[in-house]
Amino acid sequence: MNVQTAPPGAQVMAWLVVVLAAALIVLGAAWYGFSAEVHHRIWRDIAERPGGPMSFRFLLQPTMAFVAALHDGFRDARMGRAPYFWTVLSSPSEREGRLREGLLATSRLVLIGLVMDVVYQWRVLGTFYPGEALLVALLLAVLPYFLLRGPICRIARRFVHSSDGTR
Image 1 (cartoon, rainbow, N blue to C red):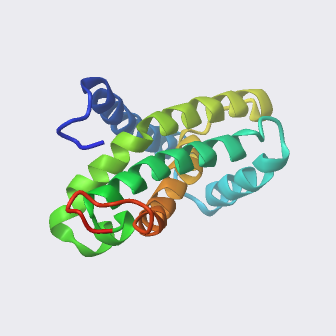
Image 2: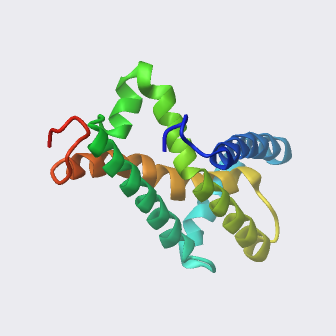
């Protein structure tokens, strides 16, 4: 999905994710601060989540990210574009546009992940850790998308014709 051709609803959702992420970071820092104890609690809680209630999301969110990366990776291959993550790292002129594409593609996944993590925290932990909810959503949805879109593009190039007629 190109930033110029994205539906207005997708753009609003992407901005909502950015604003919500900033708010969660500020809330987390204000409520709990940044200390070694907080850092230890975050990683302990994250390590305990896959074996606890609602563990289906550890399969669901990366699978949804894979589907989004599959769609966008095949589109990149058809358009003859360089792999996503490599472009983000190595091409400053294309970085902003490609990151916006990634944000548009993953914003719904991040929102779903945030909702699932809030429900998990409320039911299991009995409290709300805003920064932790954001971190889990990013680890389960955005990270797989970023890591998979480029390799999918490389593989897809072998099977699809690009828009310039090459294979």
